Image 1 (cartoon, one colour):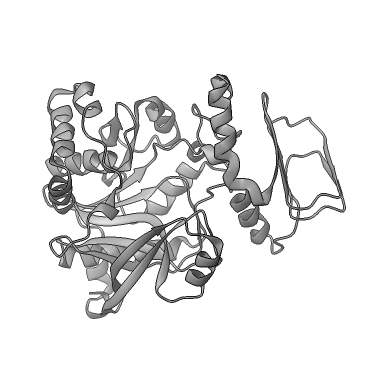
Image 2 (cartoon, rainbow, N blue to C red):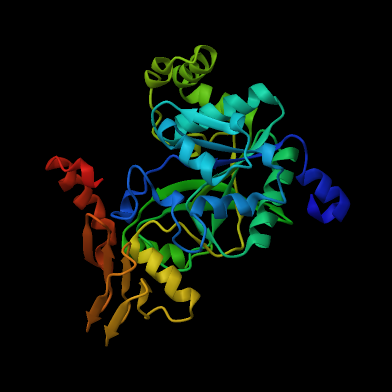
Length: 372
């Protein structure tokens, strides 16, 4: 453990030839419509910096992993666009699903790919579309996770961030006993998906609950054993796909409902490592506004992503357009999101950010798929 080894030994451990990172980049980010589209989802766009979220994610991993130990898990329709954004990643490090079938099968696929490459592989997996302010703190968690899993290869480690607010759009993890003190590691009791506001408020005030940020660390061998126990047909379909390169094998594999959460037993215990950094999944427009506003020290300010914006007496709003010559004026608004694209306009109260899914469903029902 870190408390008992020196700096040189830590660096040697973290940069072990068996340590890998996988960026999971197959999502469509529909809750950030109309900016995030099927052909160009949010992870490929610049929302919080001059770089895309995907590029920012890759940059956080540099220094802990060499480029040839960083992989990208995605679907076939996004491969070429991601390669253009991340040219340093070798072509063989793109693990491609022929069709999206949920996170669990994606995990089984890249775990099998890495296990065949390195039977001792330890994988840190993370989403491609999050915002993290403190790179050093994030990398500390990577080191802690790899160190812990190297010593406990039968365990699956999750990262958890303590809630800074009640959030009904996020998943939560309830921890049980502290099983290691330096660094802290807890056993996992249960998962809770998107609680009501009163429940989320109670979780935010408790020391027993963490946001589930969907960052995991595990031995490839352990995850495959756990998945095989949970759904042997799914893992078999993944292996047949890799052996034959026949998409039908993957497409016909049964879809598992969850990824890591389905595995929680004495044989494959789940543990949580607290993450001490500011994290945001940028899951909707309200979250993006709050993130950008807080960055400037005033959560009630109007955030404008356009060179030509005039505001009179508004607060807590976001205005964004793809047209650099368009003038947008806002007057007397409070907590309103305005997003303007070449073919769509969204005007929405921040409190209804989760209702974008209803808009998406209506677009589909009306056969207006060109707007997706």
